[in-house]
Image (cartoon, rainbow, N blue to C red):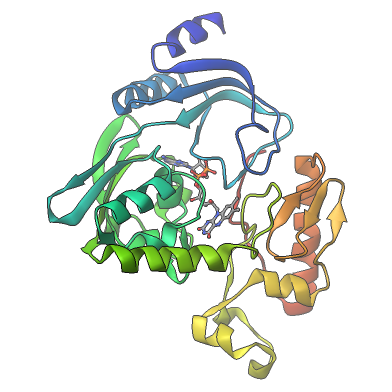
Length: 313
Ligand SMILES: Cc1cc2nc3c(=O)[nH]c(=O)nc-3n(C[C@H](O)[C@H](O)[C@H](O)COP(=O)(O)OP(=O)(O)OC[C@H]3O[C@@H](n4cnc5c(N)ncnc54)[C@H](O)[C@@H]3O)c2cc1C
């Protein structure tokens, strides 16, 4: 292990036995054996090549806002992405490193009077996390303005066009492979600063009070396509048909589980798709709650819920 420590120091700041509770919005998880903060893309690539060649397990962490670690921690290297490149190119394109916070990009676009990133207002996490999960809000998503991404794949670095990323609702190929997103290019449209700001403020207002203020990883499950509904059409609110999605929060409410607790984990009173860590929850508390929700929703509606949050056992 000592020799690994010496090697890892070449790529960034290494912390031993770093708490994952401290580094995730859920505030759950044991310790990472090695935790390395990487600020430069070149070093990130070299580090990935090293870990890959030595067969050392690693996990790429962005803002930690969509992950649930085990209380046993992570027996390998957690790579905390802190790459920071963010620049404006010709043709209203923004090039941004994966480690940059999404909200920084939203504000950068505003400063440059560019519209298209407003959907990201208030979404925690980094660009890398947003690309992987095709993050979105207010009916818009990352894929709407993304042009291409630069990735590391099994020792090689190359670009993928947006059409090669398999984007769908909270989906991409990156959810099912081991690619590491290095940077992204977004193409925006010139806009009026005041109007962009107004949209951002409206979005922020809509988010305020809707989401609980306690530790969570955002919506735990993906919302459901309306075509999965096998009940009577009139039993589903019209707005869901219009939007094409059944909010999981509504399903949870229908099975009477809002406010339900197991150990330190609770289904939020405000939002049925938010599981909150209200009192030193263990991963096991959250996973028991998840199984109970899945079972109740399946028994009542025949709908299978799929987690949006990345669970690391
Ligand atoms: C209060 C709250 C509100 C939220 N609201 C929204 C919302 O409105 N819309 C929405 O879509 N999401 C929302 N989320 C969820 C979360 O913020 C997003 O999923 C976000 O994009 C995750 O980014 P991250 O950097 O925190 O990813 P992390 O949590 O660090 O990682 C998530 C996954 O992405 C992988 N990953 C991270 N970076 C990279 C990379 N560079 N290359 C490859 N894989 C990578 C990780 O390995 C992990 O599997 C919310 C979360 C919270 C806590």
